[in-house]
Amino acid sequence: MDTRSADPLLAALPAALRPLSDPPVAPGWNHHEMTDLLGDLPRRDAAVLIGLRDGVQPRLVLTVRTTHLQAHAGQVAFPGGRRDPQDTDAVDTALRESEEEIGLARANVQPLGFLDCFETISGFCVTPVVGRIAEGAVLYPTPAEVAEVFEVPLAFFLEPSNLKRYVMEYRGHQRPMVEFVHGGHRIWGATAAMLLNLLQRMGHA
Amino acid sequence: MSLHTTLIDATALAALPAEQVLIVDCRADPAGAGAAEPDKPEREYRQSHIPGAVHASLEHDLSDLTRKDQGLGRHPLPLEQAFSATLGRWGWRPGLQLVAYDAGSSALAAARLWWLLRLAGVREVAVLDGGFAAWRAAGLPVEAGSVQRTQTEVDLRFDVRQAITEHATLHAEPAPVLVDARAAARYRGESEPLDRAAGHVPGALNRPYPDNLAADGRFKPPSQLRQEFTAVLGDTAPEQVVHMCGSGVTACHNLLAMEYAGLHGSRLYAPSWSGWVSDSSRPVATGEV
Image (cartoon, rainbow over all chains, first blue to last red):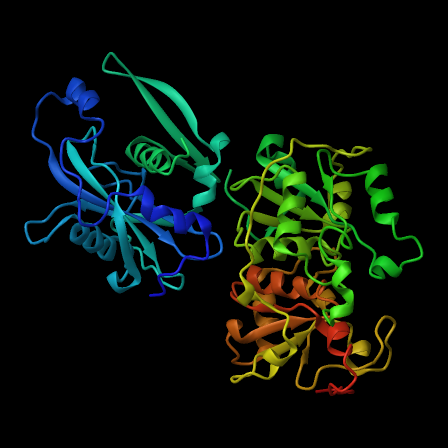
């Protein structure tokens, strides 16, 4: 894959990430908030791929999970999932899950680095892997897990007016939340929080 | 709401909340800067337009006429910086749905703006099917005057592979299949109202853009367009197709029709016929293919 970045956003990205040689470790950056909600329940390891498709407008690849899944059904999510014992590391988990869920061949992905670990309300500690996806990569979503794949320009997330902040009442706790609405898709919860982490690391939020 | 990436009809546009769409009036005169009244489109815009719409000038916003003498045809593409500045003047921001419209056909010049945004990688852009005529026929409101929106900072890049400006590229191997959107009489060389020579680029096929429209002025259904384009193109893959016309404006109509029909990835020869004949040593074909 061509590793040059004509796009200034893509060029600025690696410096904003944790390098591949330095994977993040638990606890997640929101551990304190999750401890309030979940207590000290052990978190299970998971990883997602925050994949940017190359092009004049780099685009993030997102999925809508099918409604009958156990966790996060019907939600907008990055491809990814629980770490298997056979996975060598978080990158391996993210790439394997992306192959399984959206048919993205790992040869079409160039991992760039990591965001910080993030803990979900469902008890996972997620390692977000950021990578570039080849412009021409064809995706084959698995209908059992993914209802839809869609792509959103990275520039959309960088536009401050597209970031909505609100407070959600959850089990008596006031939780500050963020969301993005792009077209018919509402991007919220863990996915929006990881995006906020990306924006903060890029100096945009 | 969901995103509109090819066509949108008048009632769907009317239902979009004002803050979720940027509407651009692209009504233009085919004679362009050489028209008897070059500022007529803008005057018509100020008299009556879709509420909230800003005005795009084919000559000044969707073209760069200062580059006309460079063999790029009558409507050279704007540079990235200039096009970004135009979008910023209109208050566009990434992710905001844009809808372009013109008098009715969508060929002058709504499809050109649609394509320029695609060239910049923007997908959240659609053309109002049937244009201003369909809007008025639906009994929807109009307004007069000029619209000023809050300006934004825009910095877009063009995907240069989508726009062919080098004439030699047309002879590359494998040679792309040219599809000419001009009327059959101009293509055959029987008449030429605008350019210095009559005829077509040798090997080009002919698909006059009005063939994309049904009797009511709206696009034919995707299945019918697909069938008709397949009849013209044979087994040529869509990515091998390069559209042209007189100056790279109405050709965008054929490109839009193919995308609407699910035939993805065709490109534009932006200088088109006027650019081709700017060098009199280039060959000219007349008659049928």
